[in-house]
Image (cartoon, rainbow, N blue to C red; front, side):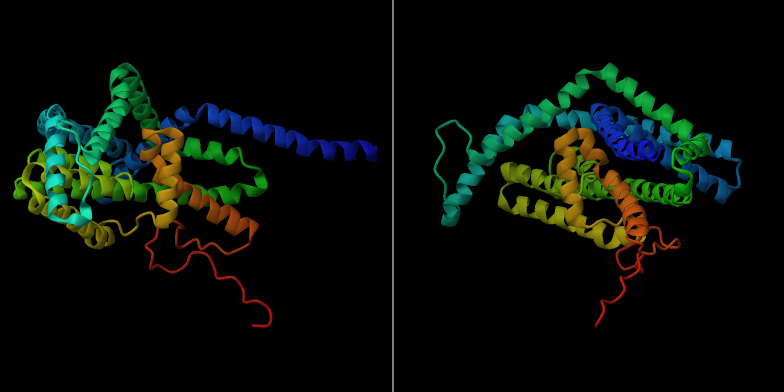
Length: 377
């Protein structure tokens, strides 16, 4: 009898390891679907947060608050599409149609700049052919177009996925308790108090990211559009909308949304205008980082910059465009799990319940207690 019990104990780790391998294989196989579900969770958290705001501030019943949140969101999207989508689409179409001419002008401007400053000297391009930088930008635009067009062509698939995300988000926002209770029920009874602490922390983290991200995108897009319009840069609306959308990808979105209009200004207006456009991009992002973020995003998701950049690179390589969109919230969720499970449970560090980990500004008190001093110190 003891031998049978020993065999059972030895067989259990093998069964658990096999189950873990199968689970990992299933996750990898269905990664695209899981990312769509994660988008639905993010949208559901946003709708729930907006409904809670209406319930607490206006005192409306929760069903009415959720309905108002959905209607207001759809009305805002439709309004934005009707107001700026035609103008943006026209500017983008004209910009892409004239890209070869702008690349040639850019190469001529770079050649003139290299002649003025010998340190930038480069071998001249053959007659009628763009230079190295212009060719590289052309290849980049072609690659972007090749990455986006397949998504536009499969409009039916995009429509189905978009409707699925919206419907799932609506159910999640309407009855979140059903799904949180289901997740808790899957956890062993001894660990359910931990799950009950983690889930609200995850909800707060995602809510902070959604609110902060929407605010930052709007302000960046607005400031960039107005600044480029004042400077007299063509296609200012297209570049401004691109800056707002690109803000969802940390660092890389900021870098690209600053460089592209500066290079365009260099091709059509010369070095002084290009420097002004580059200075505008730097100024706008400094305003967002030092004035907007501390005030509007006081409870923003606080992630180390190196971890954020590395996470964006990994998610972009693994899942493409959709990976770039959800990289930061996924990293934030992982950080919450690490703090609660690894630091709190495995290492035994006290995780404060008052300060939700991962959602406090950098200068806030520590949420994980300092380790005890080493013996002899």
